[in-house]
Structure formats: C-alpha cells, structure tokens
Length: 171
Image 1 (spheres, helix red, strand yellow):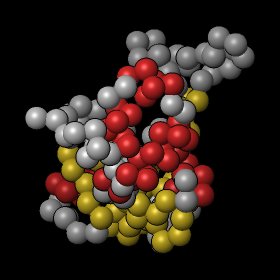
Image 2: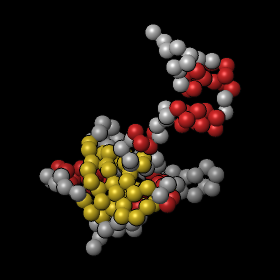
Image 3: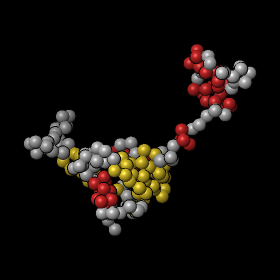
Image 4: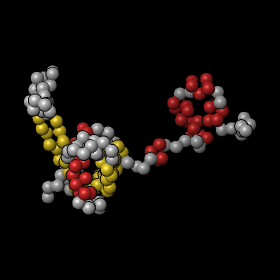
C-alpha cells in the first residue's frame, strides 16, 4: 500500500519521478532530504574511526603518541603464517593529515606492527598498549626472492627501497 501524494514527503515524491530525481542536483537533493528530515550522515552511522587507508599513511603516526585499544587477528597477510591484524588506535591530538581524526582503524599484515601485536597477544597481553613515540619507520633494500639481488627501479636504475613500520618501543 502506498501513501497518498498528499501524505508523501517531498523526498518520496521526488523518488517517484525518476526523471526529476535524475535531474536534481546534489545540493537540491541534499536540501530536500534535510527539509523532510530523511537524511543520515554516514559518519553518524559508523563507529567514529577513520580507516588508515595505505601503508604510506602510517608515516603520520611516527613520533605521535598512540594508544592501541584493541587488535584482532584476521585471515591473510604477508608475514610468516599469513595473518594480519585489525587494530583500533587513538591519538591524544588530531592528526591533521588524516582529516583531523583521533580514532583510527589500522589493518596491517607486515613483519613489523602486525607481528609485534600478535607476539604480544600470544604472550597473553590483552590490555591497552601505549606507544609513547607512536610508530618507527625502517627502510630496506628490496631483494629478488630467488636471486637475492637488489630489485632495480626501471626508471631510475636505483635499487628499490621498501618500508616497514614498527611500534616504537623505545623509552
């Protein structure tokens, strides 16, 4: 049973006219949704954590105090046993380069952070982990797994450099 046109919201009336809906601008659609009270910002539906989207984003946690509230073992990753961790992080101050957020989700399958967190879990630690200096960064020369020779960048001809991030456990 459908509502009579008089009882339908402006948003419902717009949805019933696919051509008009298609031709409605972003700003106008947003205004109609707000006016009818039928809008939810997806950020309100989430858990308030910002996803650390790339390995390069980990650099923003170098030297930044971090609390790791929790971490869980997931399925496949790059270190030894093929696992990775999903960790929930907090910073005391907003990280401007990551949208000013202070709460983050980090998925990591490296021989650095993931391995360290899994070793802590295997040792029985399940509390909140304070990393006073956040993460540290380690560069290494990428080697061919078979020949053990450096892998060269085809453009520069120089050896490729890899980066691994670790929990900075220095005092």
